Length: 449
Ligand SMILES: Nc1nc2c(ncn2[C@@H]2O[C@H](COP(=O)(O)OP(=O)(O)OP(=O)(O)O)[C@@H](O)[C@H]2O)c(=O)[nH]1
Ligand SMILES: [Mg+2]
Image (cartoon, rainbow, N blue to C red):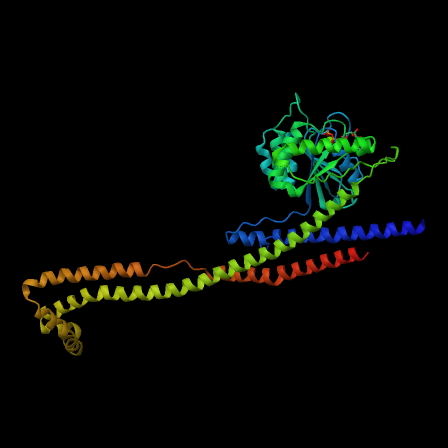
């Protein structure tokens, strides 16, 4: 007996240490994305890349007929009575059940603040008033890494929901990591609304969906249970979207100390294992996504800096071409004007304004221009002037076009990009490596036990 107790307490402590390692990994990954200016999300935003920070917990959506035992399952998992249960229609809205430091209930608006990625749920009219969060301090099983979403029981007929329940469930299904569908044996397996919702969800999320025959202890004898299961599977298979072979439907029931022991096998521990498996998968996916996102950000920064280098050398060439064409454009009219002055101003005026030396040099250097001008018949002088004006206009336009610059980064921007690159490469990536090692060390230890 004491040996058994000892074993259980060792396995409990290992279990909680695994939870805390996993919790730490998901939390640290989240903060590597979100922490201030250096977080991956902000850096990516600066590079016009939109990244989503990973969630710190997985989301498990529970759907099913009214009174199928959804809320009871949550209460059993967390070992606390946070959700009302009973034979009446107990859950009328959506409840997020999550772990936290103190027991608290949040209203719809506060819930959407807490889970900003569920914000579009507001689009389903009326849902916000029927949205709550129950924060529990429970540390049972893997609850610190799970957020359960309890949903209203599905019924057919006159029941009026205060919002479009099908649409809201479909929308929540898009964000859930696991979707549990509970069918109870009490005869509501044929609820059309449940089948419709299940069929629509399975279009995109078949891999996340798990079907359970809940309250299996109430299913009577083994033969009755088999009959109920057959009935449910038949109903499911009638739907074209669900017509797949090999429906796996474990039988589960909430163990109760007062109830008579049922002869039916309880596979509720399988549900816990499925949750655990999804958590492990999520951790691996999160770490892999972190690695990919780091690479994407580093590559974008490298591309930007490389583009900046190319733009800087392009701009240097453009500026040089601009200067050359501007000089050409200005040189022609200036030469003609100086030639005009040199040929028309009297020798005396030139010498008194420029001095003897300069006036002689001017004559000497302007001789080719003067010769060119004198070779043109005087009847064509105006034509030549017009042509030269046109030519210099072309050169000026060319100078403008050629000297168009490409945008470049300021020195401050370049330094900021280099710092961010260094942070991603030298801090975030090694951190990810360390988290991966911690995860593997812990999961190998888990297998060794
Ligand atoms: N025998 C047995 N009874 C159960 C089990 N799970 C739940 N119940 C009972 O079934 C009734 C309905 O359970 P709930 O957990 O409220 O069911 P629900 O699916 O949340 O119902 P709604 O919120 O109305 O959709 C309650 O009286 C529970 O005590 C089970 O595994 N075995
Ligand atoms: Mg309920």
